[in-house]
Length: 163
Image (cartoon, rainbow, N blue to C red; front, side):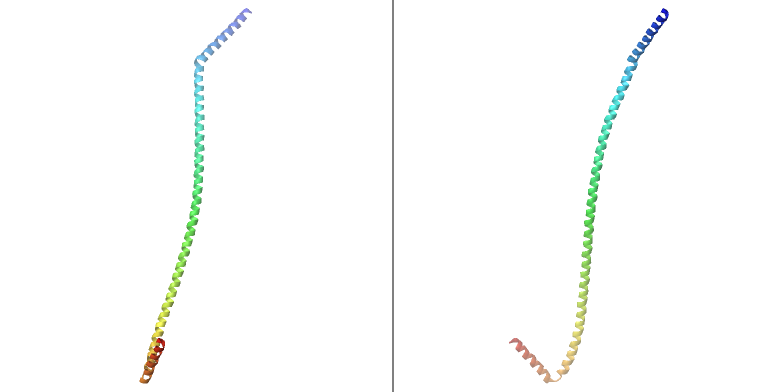
């Protein structure tokens, strides 16, 4: 039994030595490399987190700028609508004024045409009246007595008008 105890004891010692060597190799060779890799990954995660934070801030700023642009575009659209409405009203008013000017011009032209026609008719009527009166007066004043009588009546009328 002692050989089995010794064998077991050596097994434990061998196992302990193997564990110690493995621990030594792990601590001296593998652990620094793992620590460096963990530190690198940790730094990388921090960088990614910082970059993510920066990107979120940029996204927030861009969203705010987009919102401002949308608000500005809505205001501009509203102004354009108002300007368009005002412009349309001015155009309608201008068209109404033009229609009124055309109507007045037509009325004036119609009035002028009526005056011209009236003037032409008057001239024609006066011409005929003068011609008829001239013929009547010529026949009436064919005798000298009638002529003197007319001149005398005209002179008397003028005296009355002057006095």
